[in-house]
Length: 79
Picture (tube, rainbow, N blue to C red):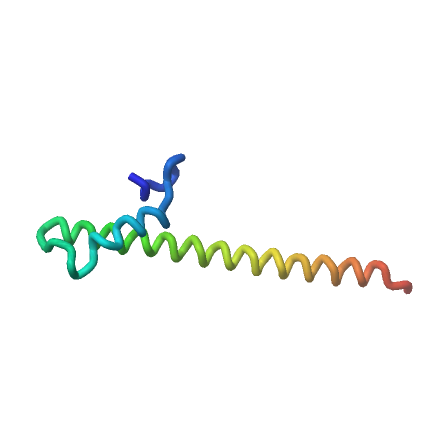
């Protein structure tokens, strides 16, 4: 349930943490092991993608800030 995107209770990092012990080599093997592994992989990938998207947004914001400062500096320069 914690891995359902777009819900108010979505907490993918917590879901990954709960799934970790269930996909370890010591966990009971069986048909559910494959389902747990698949779910863990999908949720982990979404968490990685979200982190990467956040990093890229921060980099874009920093570049916009640099561009804004350059434009302000050029406009303040006497001609």
